[in-house]
Image (cartoon, rainbow, N blue to C red; front, side, top):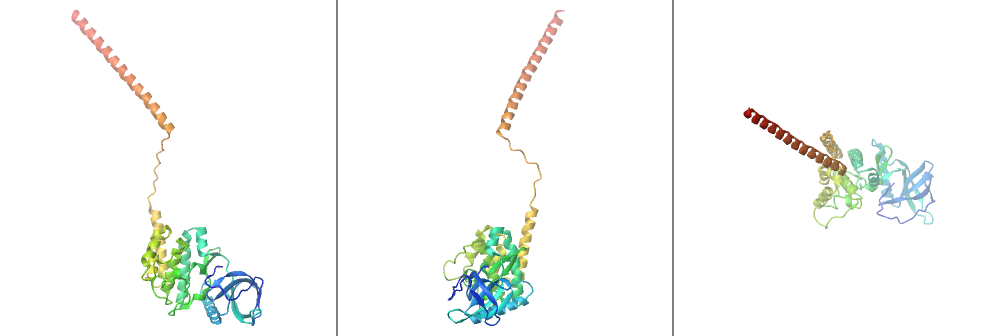
Length: 338
């Protein structure tokens, strides 16, 4: 389970610590840290339900907001994010201050980029199609994911399926994006505002596709202006992205009205390339054998034998003609002497 590593907490919960809820009295034993989010830390813990992901923070407003998002996700058809299991407070030992936490379903799988690296580039389009379906449902419910990036995506299965992590950046439509990561933020590239709208997430989807070809990412050249040419160059320079160039560029430019429209165009792009591959003419002719040195040697020997036979045949035919003419000449002389 991958997390944003942008911020370390002001507190440390050691392995083996038992976190017991103040109100619900459920206990969770901490195993290890899964990652740091912008609003808190997520730990792998074990409770009565088995392994869980537990997010803890000293920011009650942030926790409340994320809990509301997860509760809303649970009402949306389909598995958008992890299931919410518990919400409570915890008195931090030795300090007495109250920390807030919520417990989620622990999703076990591979992070987005590692999965593609391990299984092949052809999985990029499959996972992006799934992601666009989920985004369309989220947008229809009035939310924008905001901090959309490979670190917040996990591939579980089989069957392989994209799931979302760390919903801390999820924002209601029309508001300002709460959290973002520069590489996936259109404002950073000078390609639009940070207003929470579907096109903001779709720009991030395009950048996730670019990130698959440039796993170490790259920075913009200079601070001011529109950096669109740099992104186009990156797409055109990566063989794995060339086939999706039209879709990626339209998403970067904000030309898709919704995630379903982008998904449909991606399907059409994949289908057209499949047709092109199938329509290539197949050469059914028997390939001509490539002559070896032994074959060439045998051919030269046969040619020399044929040449000798032809020369002998020519000499023999000349000899026969000479004998015939000589006999004809003697017969002609004998006839005149009689």
